[in-house]
Image 1 (cartoon, one colour):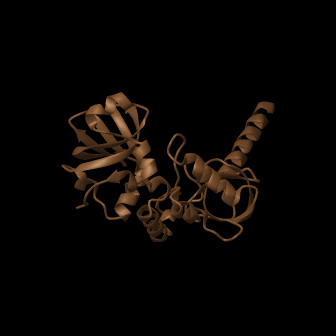
Image 2: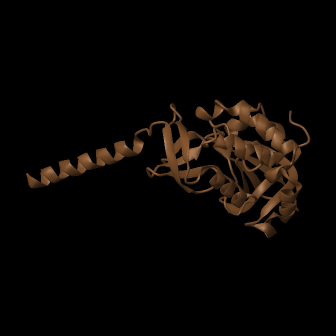
Image 3: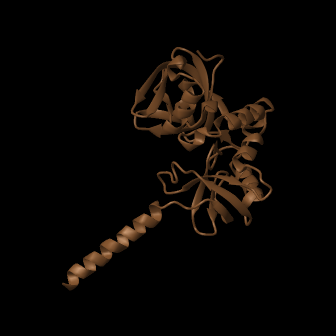
Length: 254
């Protein structure tokens, strides 16, 4: 009997814990306790919030620190407005997905993109709501060569060909070569380069953005393109992760 009671109590605790994790955090005003990076913060209630519509540089990428510091200047220790996505309240990591606005009313994702400290990212369902607005801001930042789009950032990435890739594992590179094939496995696309075993891996979240912009990944086959990212060893060779269409440069798109 006692054992049965204990099991029931444990089951109830698990249900409460799970429901608390999966439940939605209501939209409203919250104070930001900590800034993780350019697009992720922790609120005073302990919830981690991932900004919708923007993807800022990761650790060891150019302008990672600048994006984090700018985010801090906008929200750290301040009371911000958090509009939680009603359709998809959390991502697979349990982070709250939301649009965040500074006390001055600035849309933080838009500010970061405008200043060249992030890329526009339109992951459905919620990301498409501000997709056009943020894409226009990104185009402006790119034309003005701000931040990640500037010549200084590009000059810091080593320009190589696929032949030289094995000598630069772990480094940020701008690799230019001919795409021999574009293949899909599940939700992930692979742009294979000739003649070496090097691939640009288009992540699922980036694929949605390619589709939204009307870019067919098959159109890159047989063309010379430049991809920017960190080279790492994957299961089938060297890979460069593509998390945004802006990481691929080509003379034209079919």
